[in-house]
Image (cartoon, rainbow, N blue to C red):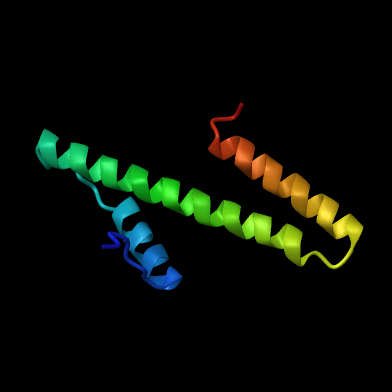
Length: 85
């Protein structure tokens, strides 16, 4: 059984925006921990989606120069996601 769910990107972005803007300071520690774990997982997913789009730009590049700059953008994004190493 597949445990993954597909949702439209627009819905994901809306969910991400709303969760990112919720103030959870008044909630107990357990709720806050679960909230920040969830938000962290969504941040990671968003980063990976952006990385995949950056990679697709390399594939779709119309010429060698465009491909070069798309690859540079991809590698910079990948470095940020991998922890700035």
